[in-house]
View 1 (cartoon, one colour):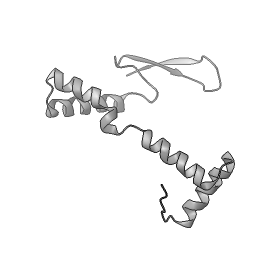
View 2 (cartoon, helix red, strand yellow):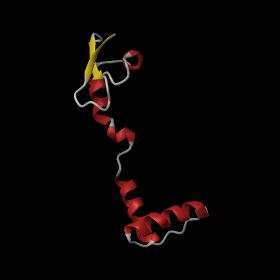
View 3 (cartoon, helix red, strand yellow):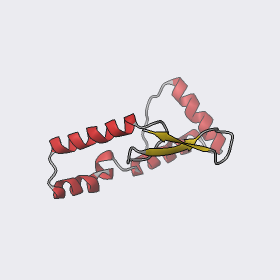
View 4 (cartoon, one colour):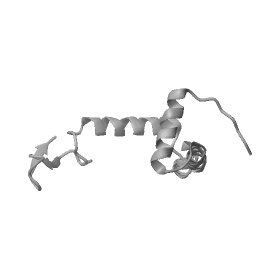
Length: 107
């Protein structure tokens, strides 16, 4: 099948540059990119198992929105780089250039 599309010159130049870097024609590169994109899952497909679990748990949309907002707030109030959900203590590098250097941060 042949498809003809019109794209801006700037986009064509960027695509041609990437194709040349891979050693393929512009057409081959465009086909490869389109094939990869077509194989990607949509967000709906990606989150279907999560949506099914939420539905099975009987969580309402309102309850879910509240839980998400609480989680976002918790993450935003943590010190940068802190992955602790306990809110008590995080270990972070005190000096980026010293391997293993850590200090404790109280939240």
